[in-house]
Length: 349
Image (cartoon, rainbow, N blue to C red; front, side, top):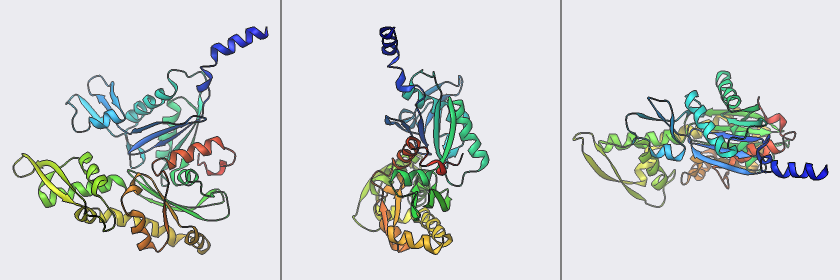
């Protein structure tokens, strides 16, 4: 009998990897990351999906779909289902998330998973409901929500459960979330729907207004990554190709880092203003804690050159850049999932 049980166990052992596996998801405007308990990050893809307008079938998801942005034929619609950190197109978001999850678990759904999904700190009840429904439709046994700044703080290994304030600024693609965390909960928070994509739009508008040149979002993003900065420094330049608005023909211009810094000044000021608001609204004791430990800067938007120095100069508080800004949120959600009881107070649903 014992041999029989061992044989059965050997047959099913390859399946046990995904039976009831808990999953943490950073459902971001720019990228979606999936952390599987005991495995780590298994999915890190742009939040894009390409759908056939006639059949409704998915043509591409993630990086492949992003590469189709602005290039797809008329019958293919490329969409970003997550906007400003919340579900903007529910059906497309469901198709996208199901595809990502299938890469993790294949077709094995013998036991439903517990799922943690990270959300912006100023999400509405309706938006929360949409995220929970999304997780349940993807097969979750139960869905917990976690504030993105809380997840980022846990991912950066800040002492969130201690009676001491620690401050996180998470700059994503669509939103910037700011929070001061103490004793396992958020003591003070605020957010603004200004982040990486608003910088891209500012660059697009600058090129249009100054050079009468129309460029796409992906080209603006490339410019930001290559020569964008928040403080004066090394002179950088890049050549951009777009459509001449007067002639309707291709045109090239050279851009330099100084003009891009000026172009993105408005969204950067909006981000710094929301950090200042949180400090203004916090208790003197929390502000004192932050002054001693500094501000933790994370998220893809934090990778802009010199942003930490620009914030330090304007806020007069030390700013530390996370070691892995793009992964902090999902790593924190995964850590909270694996130590559920320790971080139980952090979950908001």
